Length: 137
Length: 112
Image (cartoon, rainbow over all chains, first blue to last red; front, side, top):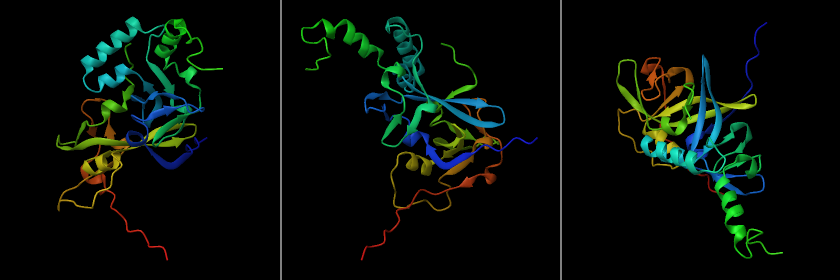
């Protein structure tokens, strides 16, 4: 039996213009970071599939030179708390692009803000009045 | 972390010079167009050349072009060989590529 042709939405998405380097916002409007990289999966005799957006300093530095990228990656693996690979958001969570990139998962699930969480837990909460992240009752 | 060879990064692909089958450079990759296929996105076109750069920067120009020069190519995914990511190469003759010009400023109809 012949395989059914894939259903395509004919409205094209310009990846360089509308996704790369754009601010990522979660459903609550919280800023997650910027799209530093987009990962494609190359497939045999099929168009490349967009699999993920990467939010990582190392990815951003690698665009300048791979040596900077490798060094930033080494720093990340050495010092970043509890993370062995850069934060990736699967492209299935992409909602729309343009001025900002909207995703349909909350920022906590992206693991893009591990440093902010670490600072909040270890430093900010130790400062008098900083236990609730500076929020007032 | 070592990356699989089947993975490719858009940000590193942008700006790469694409060569024709005879080795001639025909332009740089400036934009990638993705379309939704079932539940995911696939890259269907690569745009090359200065017109593609203007398009990627989301600016309009005045339609000024040099006569006799091609300012952009629209390359389908199956017309580009990405096996060597540093040196992308066409899989078809340049004549088979679709040419395109930069988006011109259109006149708006004046409201009555």
